[in-house]
Length: 426
Image 1 (cartoon, rainbow, N blue to C red):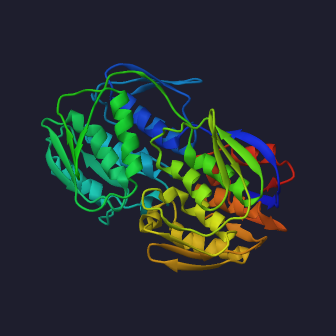
Image 2 (tube, rainbow, N blue to C red):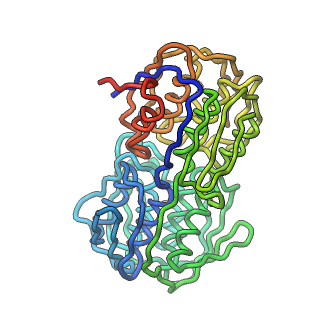
């Protein structure tokens, strides 16, 4: 399916941010390892999170899907899946579930074409340090992967932190079930640290505290997750598209269901918008953004690579030259997002230079409508749509079905704000 979008201006309205994808993934996994029944309230039910929910059920975890999700944890005593677990398009799922699989016998994890290109070797090597036999079927460090677990020895584990924070999250979640204490040492600068903070936050809510000193995490053996009721907060990554739209279209939009004290790294979009010249104001249950003339910035997105397409869209209409740096790990997402952003946003008539670790974007006063493609990447599809909604003429965004991965209601919410602004075509 494709979307046709047209320029919108000076709209006023509000949206309710959907539940956080990152928190939902982690709550599902940790609840499955708890000793008893947990209730996950207000979860995001999207393609990615349903992949995680299906994966934990493959280990014999009983799940009741209603308005909330009831998960009957087994305390780490898992059944061995009878067939490979298909993680579909979710890189988060395959990485978090690789850790869970180390508590079981022989488990094969796979996914779609995109996931089968995702790097896994650092996590596989770390699992081996814990005494788990783990390898790539293709012997190239990518899925499908086989995990032959059953017990985790513990001890010192060294892993690099500059490819994916999901590796660290996976190891943290399973470490309480090791035979001995685990010391997790990060050997390179940790990118996307806020996602690790989210993992630690979820672990703490389920009763497990992790000590951190410099580049090491210390996890005690023998501690088990306690069942709990866990409420998922709103998602800044998803709200960012509408806040950016307000800034780019001289509109006024409130994104509700956002916690000001959230640990989500993408909360920085609020500061980015203010720095670029938008009027930003916290309201009782969210953020209000009122757009105007935008100016270029120099920004490090090392901790928030998912914001790359959104900030690229903003930079296209910002006066001056925007530099986005330290985001090389965005090349290992659903697509190579640095390359994809450079290619697709240029089609709006913007001069963009691709660098190894980011982009240099020379903003324009106005954008020209274009035919652009998402590469099957949900964040590309939504950011390109926001640019199209701020461009002269008609823009067609190809292959938008991918938004179901994280934000199935995105285009419905766009139409609610500005019914004339978009339509869908097959």
